[in-house]
Length: 203
Length: 203
DNA sequence: GGGAAAATCGAACGCTAGTTCGAAACTGCC
DNA sequence: GGCAGTTTCGAACTAGCGTTCGATTTTCCC
Image 1 (cartoon, rainbow over the protein chains, first blue to last red):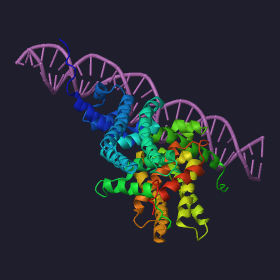
Image 2 (spheres, protein in one colour):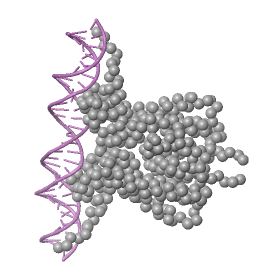
Image 3 (cartoon, helix red, strand yellow):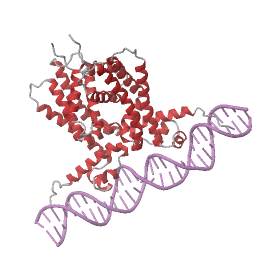
Image 4 (cartoon, chains in turn brown, green, purple, blue):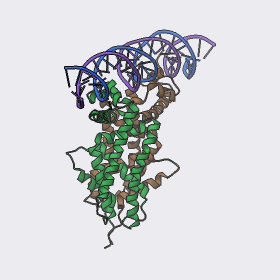
């Protein structure tokens, strides 16, 4: 007479979430309709409510999952580095991890970055906390590099972080697999951010 | 008996366009309703159609105006430079101009970058032409700099352009007037992109 | 293989969307 | 101050929205 904890509705739930990410990305928060999301998930609109009790709950799940994927991946990548890795190496790994995650989870990442500004305030405020914790990880990488003397003392690290994340997030908009490898993009970006575009002055 | 060329409905028209930019920015393409736009412009919904014949015509006008402001400003800023300006100076001016325009026309710029991916396909394709012509101006600045030997021959200019525009466009999302000056942001960005974050090797 | 729980359907609800259009209100010239 | 033209209103229409909920199907343990 006891109810079993849960069945395999998890499969359906994931299908719904994936569909939602795609549809939110393509049509924005208001433009994404429950009927279209349901159709993409192979369901009817009413059935969505068995898995998520409202549209807001759906967008919240999409936003959080997208952001958490980045956080988890970055943590793992940094932990896998040898303890004596240089700040430059750490930053390069962070570049690669971020872009890789963003491309792999393209639907979620693009949905997150495109829809974030259009979501009801309460949802945005809540999601901002997760977002900030990700920013903090980047701040730490940069700060340590500067303390170690590897990065210029004159560099404004807040600006550097905003520049880097702006540039990296933008990749999700233009990167097309096949044309260029993720490795090329990240190493090209790293070269610019590390060493600059300008030919150094002769001494 | 001849009709006068036009009256001062231009004032109303501009008010409608400004309101539309704000509302599109805040609520996305689908979430922006004609009734809210009208209210922000001091009109009723039906009256909008005297100035713009549909919601699509409105978003098209917002997108084009936002992009054209950037193009015009960049052209003017580059033309105002002395002919012997270095590529570095040209790039710095381009940075400053882009950010300044983006902040000054914040509603339009943010509306453009946020809504671009959600707009009906036909509108997006048309708008992409203007967008590309702006990208071309940046490509030229970078190419000339490399030809002159001011920028590293090894640098991938396509990646550099994507990095720069990604970073610059992102400023519209986080820049709050008062906290930091546009000058600080652009010179900070320029320092990183030109000279890099890393402390150069000793010779 | 029967039956309870899990999962889905499908019709319906109230509401708001974009748009239309005839009537009303303004505007500026003679 | 009247009147043609310009601009705005306001009510209405259809369509589609998010959501609800009883009925129905599917699933899987005993």
